[in-house]
Length: 252
Image 1 (cartoon, rainbow, N blue to C red):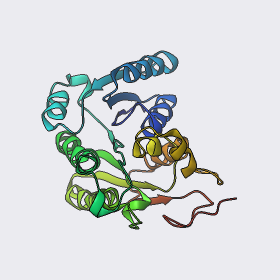
Image 2: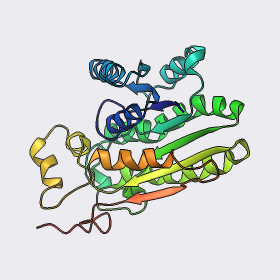
Image 3: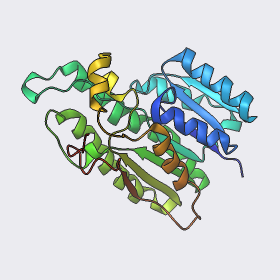
């Protein structure tokens, strides 16, 4: 049965991989992102290739009123959102707390925490009204273990972990599933963004071991949505075989 899936941060990495796997399985998509050309290119590609409906919503998840306007303007055919994948987020900078760039802190808090809250706030009432739905939050091992110079990024992912638990409790009376998928090292644009475009530094993060790929996490996201109605995956921590904890990685 075809469902409607809304994915934030859909233009790259885990979000893009999620778009592909849901499209292959014939679900209609609402794809959200800030990079309009990439967003529309992906939407057109998936719509033509898989013969599904795709709606591209170009907005900045950090801006509450853009999020609210985009969701409130959805036409009736798009309002029955079955699955919300809260993927949008980033890491910015990697410095100690006394040298941290406040602009970086605000980007992470606005994207990873406030953005997740905004989109959930405007989508979840439609799920409550229908007494069904599934919210999947992309967390991180950084939300389980604080590491050197991770400070604010870790704090935002700890918040995602806590919010996932809170959503599960708050939405329990409405038959809404809530899951968290928390990856370890995934080779995406993550490190390139963290190091502000320094490709050499970003590449070094993944040297000497086989990191997770975006598709590995997308597979897990999709899996959580295929289970029987009485089964919910609350929390799933996924690591590369070479990674035992946030900072323990076996490199060759």
